[in-house]
Amino acid sequence: MSLDPPTYLASLQSNIRQRPIPWDGAVRAGTLSEDHYTKIRAVDKAKKPEQRKEIVQGDLDGYRLLFVGGAGKPSVIESAAQHANVIQYILVLLSDLLDDVPSLAKALFKDNTDPYRHFLPLLKSSNTEDAIPLLTAHALASLMATARDESQATHQALPMMFSYLSSLAKSTDAGLQDIAVLEYSSLLFGHVSRHQFWDHRSETIAPLIKILQTAAGVGSNGNSSASLWSGNASVRSTGFEGSLGGGVGLQLLYHVLLVVWQMSFEAAEMGDELNDEYDMIILYTQLLRLSPKEKTTRLIVSTLYNLLEKNQKSLLPTAVLARLPSTLENLTSRHLTDPDLLEDLEALKEMLDEYTKTKTTFDEYVAEVQSGHLRWSPPHRSSVFWAENARKILDFENGVIPRKLAEIMQQSWDNDKQVLAIACSDVGNLVKEVPEKRHQLEKVGLKRRIMELMQSEDENVRWESLRALGGWLKYSFEEMSI
Image (cartoon, rainbow, N blue to C red; front, top):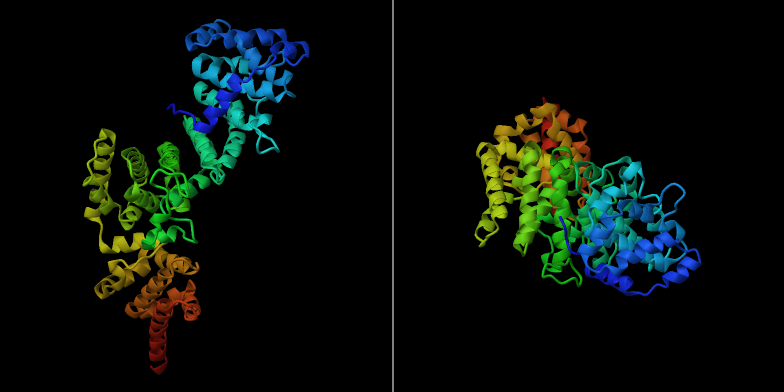
């Protein structure tokens, strides 16, 4: 997949191409060899891509030696190491030739050569204004993507590439972020590179999720994913209008969505963890509501389909809780024309429809608790539900639900206190309907935690914890009087 380079990178490369370099003086000073100069001059004079392609293909071995060197023949990167202007030019030239002559990429790996060894040190610089690391990353990304190489050399070089690109993705400069994301996209060409990307997710994926959370109105002003579950995300703070001024620009959004879509092809192995760590289903449901263009909507829908299709048992319940079915219904009211989008949209709706046909209220409640986030869905306030299902809830999978409620209640939920109020209410209903099982709830720490929450600053949390404890004391007194 080929995408145009961001404006800043394209402008930088253009300036370097036009910058005059005294090649004759460089040869005399020993900065590069006569052979180096001959190769550079040949392609420098040939301005048309077809001419360059003919020259390089006619001497692939010579151009391999120019860029990566060989036995007794240092590369131009080694020879000109102390001359930044020459290094910058060579990096731009390499990127250009890889675009014009794709066969050069494979040639650089000839005889099990490690083509990265002299380039990787260039990714490190103490000067933030130094263009060499950026140009190096672009050239190496072009090399890896064009060669589709999965050798040990590439396997060892990728983490260094990811680390440098991550520094750009974490930047507050949207232009640098976009460069990083585009390079990521070019590198995720196969199963091996995608798994390495996932293995380094704290550096690679986490900054991209922050960009998406900002676009969804989450992550600023103290908000978190809790804002999405509670419906309090601040949409107006986003930059969905296409402006890069304070929010997320449409181009950057599209490119980040593209990278996550590429990663979603590994959903069978990493889909559950992706959702557990980053709340992907609720985040993408919110992004779908806000998506301003068909091209962004297409990537969101396709990513959701990939994640859900490979993890139906674990993620379909979360999708229902996130109100994805109703969001898809609203989406069909738009005038959509993209055939791939329409196909994925229909397949996603069918999958969710099939799931909801067989889902019971008990299933809905279990899925909500296991999602780790509670909201005032119908089961919580239904006396009929508790009368019919309380014992079943306590017995389900050896008491997994009370343990999960205890885990939920141990969190502070500073941005969504209603979760604690709901959990207290649920515990109170369990005590009311199955009082003889109180010890099971006490064993996982629920009584102790409810007593702590009676001191909560939130009025609703105090009220629900008081009600739950009241039920506990009632049955305790009744037992004492017998």
